[in-house]
Length: 317
Image (tube, rainbow, N blue to C red; front, side, top):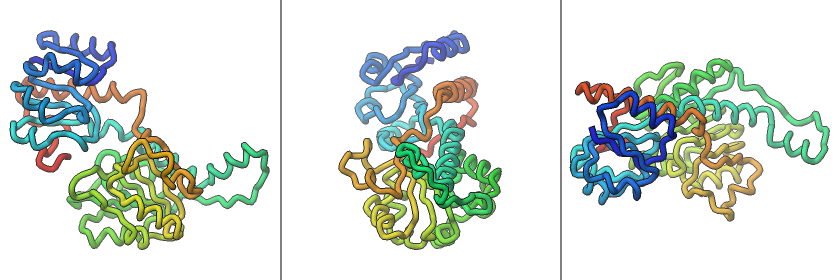
């Protein structure tokens, strides 16, 4: 096989691939511009996805399979990919550990008032009257119950939380106490959740999925966390909901525009915690992604159709 990368792969992982597949030809590049010299012969492309254009797909006349070593594929030229019948897989699921740990860490921080306590430490203030709460016995609603959502549910159950899930299919997810799928059922999740976490990807169906009317259905004491995609939330509506006290707090790792502009009002809101799209970062990220690719390549060479994480190109996820 003629295998090209347009993403920087660690040297030790390059060697591991070469050792495991000695009869295949690997061409390692750090970006799509470097990779263009080999694109016309590529049968398999390992990429981050966001660097690909229709022109690249048309140039890669022998391309059969694209392995996206990330979970998000918002900017991929799926129309061109579909026209050529190219198989697409991604690294969905490899983020589940860091993103679930991030979610639970942020929930604990809000429950135990970490922002206030850190500020008090910086100012030398000893104040034992800061209101504390527990998460045991609380309810968490999870929008998007794939690998990440299910792992969040697993950790939440360990803390004694009730878990509610919402997904497109209504298919049951492990560690979720009650599952919802229909649009009208979303109201139940919003109403019952003390913590609502969105793990939704960006698709035509999910753009602007959460608006002011949804936040108004939530508890005044609720905390909203977004670790999926910023475009799934109408940002101005979220800001209004926070200012009007419709919800108590928001933990945001993703935004409509990234980096978040310095003049965005979210930066200065006391009831908002901002992180720069880092919930999925882990030192083990590439190891997991390349291991997933290697396992899929073994199957692909044997013409086994059951590859992991095959993407429905017409839907983009």
